[in-house]
Image (cartoon, rainbow, N blue to C red; front, side, top):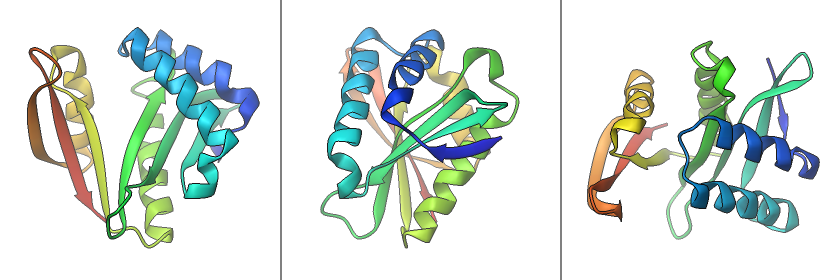
Length: 156
């Protein structure tokens, strides 16, 4: 697997890949497109980072992370996704390890990840636990009634 910076031309592939996972809501897919457009337009100058993972020239996943404003070296992992047919092959773990190393290289000290409490995200929550993240907070009914925000954290 090769990890490289995301290019503007990758955006349609990343949006389609994310949609095809079957996990994200239409509003989230639209937001991803806007986030990537903003990243390429200006947010990369504010420390935002976007990378894609390729195997044999095909994109199999991506990550998007950025420093948290008004904090002392705290970062957020905003997006991580692996193509549905390439999941559970270690690509997500490699991408997460890449993000952690990238943040450490930037002198980051803490990584936060937000996700949903719904059953659809059970595998996601297990993934973060497996990789040493602790369940740090739960905000009830954050996304909608019955859909809490779960915040994971890992000290780097």
